[in-house]
Amino acid sequence: MTESNETQRDVKRLKWHVENIDKKLDMMVRGDADVMEAIADVFRDDEMLCKVYLAVNGERTQQEIADEVGTSNATVSRKISTLSDHSLVWKKDYDDGIIYQKDELHETLRLDQKVTPDGWNDE
Image (cartoon, rainbow, N blue to C red; front, side):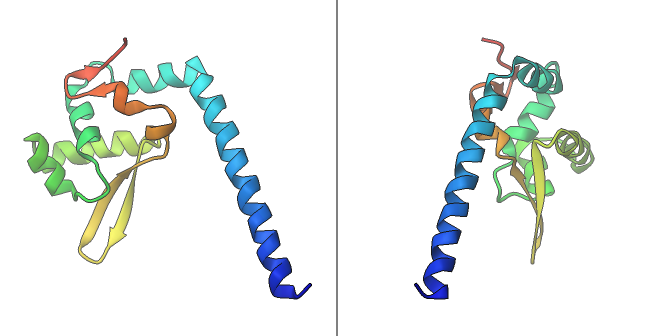
């Protein structure tokens, strides 16, 4: 077997291994009530934080998010900082500036079912 074939096989094994670790981690995080409660505490009683979080889509800048939710750039900056501190949002540098992206926790914890423009959905 050539080195190239061995390398490809090793890469495939590593990729499979990482994907399985990700799936197990997702199951563990999703099943941990303390994790969900901690995230709920971040969003509870802060409608603007929820609105900013929902406006983050991997394409918008801070100013575009402010325009979308109808608040000041400074407010969005504070909310983004809170979200970043809790690893819920991260920033991506692009040629035209910085845009914001939701973390993988969004899908893992199905936050689209919990975070609404009116606040946290406890149902």
